[in-house]
Length: 316
Length: 224
Image (cartoon, rainbow over all chains, first blue to last red):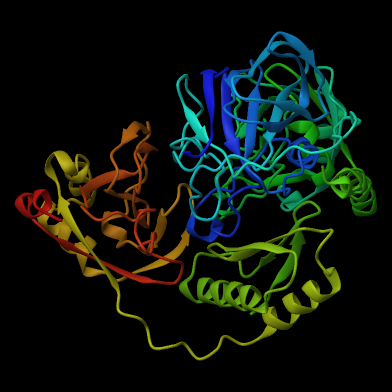
């Protein structure tokens, strides 16, 4: 029998295939991509017994309708949606069994912006430069480099028999923001390109996420940051979560699909533990930034890692 | 050569060399990046050299930060190794002007020269790949002769065809994919700077030497 596929009945607003990202080619200009909320992505894989890098679906704001061809474990994490399997409600953050002809429908979204759907053995589209992650702008990876479309048939990994008990529902891995999030930042890498009070200004009032925001970055609208040495630097690398500030003084928060390099000064960087929270925000949501210490950043990351490892240890 | 280490959040450090666009500084940056890459430290995810700095991305939970900092400090102070014999330049055929190079005329007026002179100046130099960025396989090449170093267009084009060769100040480059872009387009190459189906997907890497040479429209159209 041919390899089992996942059939896309309705694609949702923006559903893409993402693994842990296309690391190792930024020196050649290849963006990392990967999940906007890497923590929920990893939890979804853990719940179905996949390796943490397995390819899963990232579902944005409006969810898809999907049909399965064989028995699989499935889990949905991240944003809270009303989800039904053949008309029966299923819970988020818990694995459930689907069988041939099972239909999974996403309904109303309650909280958060992006859900992750992992399937046991993962989605087996051909990797490109070592990764299955979709990068929309360069049309790379995933389903022919684009978001899912109705009629797509996504190959799945070799099935494993679903045996024994599955994991009980787990706590959400990321606190889902209610249209507002507090994100902690560390100053730099170009703190010295800004006026002396710029970090205070950054923390003085919330920033709104502009409509022109996407997987590359969030264009923020709020207190204007003042450059001290002009708004151009010799182009350098642009890390995940960095706040780059063009001449307008309005920062752009660089997210998963960011370009590898950029020529604007970067005032601060969102700590790794809070990037996942940023990934659960959508247009018009607001962000308060708070400067923290490296020790606080590390403590938050360790706490997040402990929670994920506890689930991964169970291995469905 | 002096350097400083700056952090970018909790999972990247940037090692900055001197703040100028200079082949010697860039060579130092690339050699440093190669040395850090070769050290193969557990937890390091990516090493990205740019004009004058190298970013090191790492997983803070799986990286020995003391070992990483020791590696950075050891490699950053090393004098540049004797330059290896320069590899043969990557040679890029370009069909200049006409519909494939819609801004050649503007660059010629900027240079107060004719189009042939612009082509002569663009093909006379051997360029250095200072870095790649913007989109997969896009190489920032320099330095362009000052006479043809025209600034970007004030309004970027919504769509620049792949293979377009452009100038932006002292930089020149080839668009690997169709994207928006503001560089002055003087011609087009039939080569693909990035082709994931190729055994070596990338035509260029940082530090390479590059030369352009003119081909006519017939040669462009029949290029295999």
